[in-house]
Amino acid sequence: MLSDIEIAQSAKLKRIDALAHEWGLEDDEFEPYGWDKAKVSLKADRKPAGKLILVTATSGMPAGSGKTTTSIALAQAMNRLGKKAVLALREPSLGPVFGMKGGAAGGGYSQVLPMESINLHFTGDLHAITAANNLIAALIDNARHQRQIDLKEVTWKRVLDVNDRQLRFIVSGLGGSANGTPTETGFDITVASELMAVLCLANGEADLRERLDRLVLGIKRDGTPFTCKELGATGSVMALLLDAMKPNMVQTLEGTPAFIHGGPFANIAHGCNSIAATRAALTLGEYAITEAGFGSDLGAQKFYDIKCRHAGLKPAAVVLVTSLKALKWHGGVALPEIGKPNMEALKKGLCNLDAHVANLKAFGPEIVVSMNHFANDPEDEIEVLRARCTELGVRFAISDGFALGGKGAEALAKEVFEAAAGEPVALNYTSEADDPVLVKIEKIAKRVYGAGSVSLSDAARKDLKAITDMGFDKLPVCIAKTPFSLTADPKALGAPKGFDLPVQRLILNAGAGFVVVTTGAIMRMPGLPKAPAAYNIDVKDGKITGLA
Image (cartoon, rainbow, N blue to C red; front, side):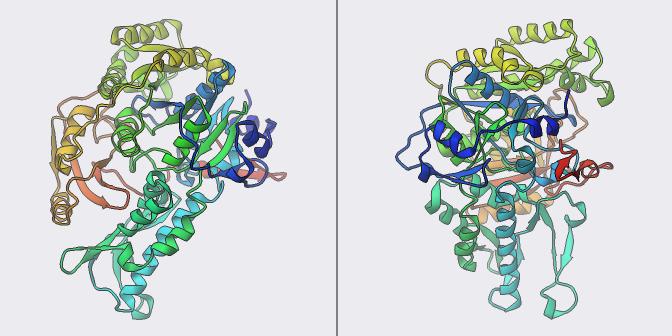
């Protein structure tokens, strides 16, 4: 089989203007960026009327779950079966593209194109967020240097869209007063920037301005928050984000429209594409297929409790992606061995599936388990997985989207059609809107992760007091946690119960409208692996090679 990039580069795409017109967009509703992608601004009188389908997964593993591939395959299959389906996905970050995980444009014959552009610079959205974030940082430090502000603490960090552990903790402003004020600080990766969350959650220009105004950048001497509005940076940041606020329209290998916009990671951020892109997909399609990052404990929980609650979205059904490989890994098999038959490990790893099904049942929408199929998957192991889904009372389908594109996901599409029939059910959120921050953390830890307790570090207790004193103690929470386990320990596989969730820090994101809770050893600036994917990428005869 050809590599992903070879498949992508051999595809014949529709011109983006032709695709836009085919799906009902008028000339003043899209701006082509070249001939294969466009920025979209739908007219205000268009109303979303499609059914929303969430794609999530069992707990992650280093080899990935196949969520994006499954999402793309499902949308392609729906269109093959005569229904109008549109994708709404996140934008890739350069961090994993050049790091361990690789790109995020799908795989095999279920890809969004142009994959090289989407995985690299695309329409410049992440660059715009990086520039806007760092403009704020520069304006803060300049105002301090000019003695225009006097802050007890600067909480705003700079960001960069690469994995660079060297920048996690630094001292800036060294070399004398002409070079600034010496400050202990650090960098986060761009997808963890609060501006990324603001872009993904903002409802138009007015809401964007309000969110930017209330960004908390530091703490004044009297303990009150210092905001972006007080700094006077809102206007300039809005100018940098103006085009980035518009969803990007591209297409799949089979010509299915895809809105790809916003890229927060689910392990360190809220893991969902923009509300604007989701609404655009719901407006153009009978079905809008969207994914939430990593497993249901991270992506789906944040999708429901943060995105859906804020935007009033009601998914009609949820697809839970898993694979025999993933379940065997959670059954204790070493990564190089997960492709080999191992019934004992599969049965041991089914507890992870059970936990995610239980989580998703609690939220409400009907579940379809989608098994990401590999050519050497043993039939007897498939039947064990199918039987477990029957025991759990959830639908089951095999997806061959990687090898066969939309055709390979038609069985999945049919199950989703049935699961999504009728009116969407009311969502059951994990916590009450007016629960204090600590109560929200405890409810997520116990109800979703299976924890028995939550412990706060001394630094986290100070953070909680500061957040409470500033009046932000009722905000939603966004927990940053390893994707490889339901616990905060990436080595604790399966479905542990009754463990303690160690909270390290609480980070106020007043503009985004939530508190980020870091747990375990989670870092908001990832590092590169021993053999980064960057070593495999090149350009030959004017074409990019090695991108996966």
